Length: 89
Image 1 (tube, rainbow, N blue to C red):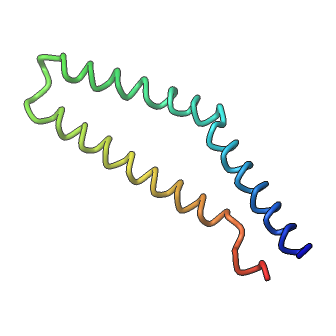
Image 2 (image 1 turned 90 degrees about the horizontal axis):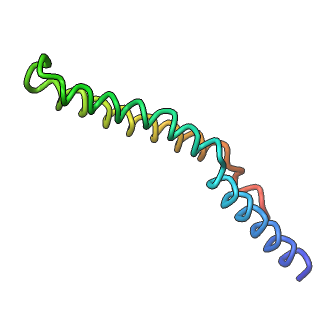
């Protein structure tokens, strides 16, 4: 019984650490640092009359594709950094 309660307490502590990590201000700062220039670039390209038709969609498609690739890399890294559940008996 004692081992079971200790395991439950450990899992609760790990969940609390994960929820604190999601509110990390570094993630917010990174989103602002990368997001604001990307939005400004989209606006400047869209409003520029010298840009060829279709190039705006190409750049937007590239940005969205890169965002998904970056998100996938970070998700794989997050999953790789998690401790294995097989170690608990």
